[in-house]
Image (cartoon, rainbow, N blue to C red; front, top):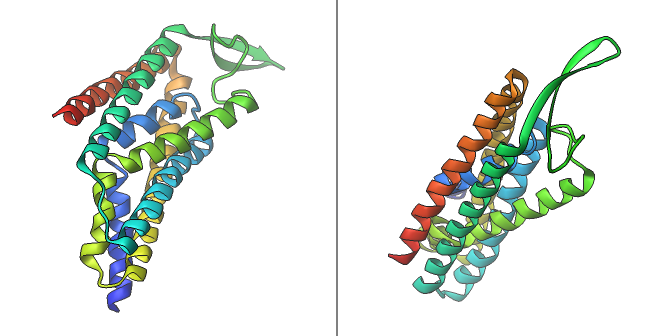
Length: 231
């Protein structure tokens, strides 16, 4: 294996591993609870990874070419914003879990389990309005970009500079890192969506519990990030 191939393979693995940071999983999990089912959840995970990767590639390439570095204060502010965002998402998830209800419905002689919220009566879980689709995708892209600026996401832009002697290799490293992140988070989203779909089919109580658990985890991780950003 050539040096370049080894560098790119390393970047892919590092990108995949980096995507499983607790704050990343917490954010994606919250949105997956709104879209039970692996297909939609896979897209949400990929959107988060895309947003994260766009920032990493853009900022990292600029830093690699210019030789500049991100100020510590900038990273601290980004970490606090991530923490606040996760707390807000967690609170909204707890509220949605409280409003969620389920019932059996017979259609053409076949019984189906319907889950709906009083906030959007008549809307089936897993099939939100097309406008909600666009909002979710936009939010996931934005949150992924925010994560790209904070914590280890901001630190990783320095890795190619240290690992590569040329700016062009640094850019390739960042691109491969981004692909690894997108792929791994898409797979996580699909797995989480499949599990959430299963929870929604058991009972409304189990479904509500899964959403509430995701909300509590998001709040806990967000509080940790706020504390870390202020340290």
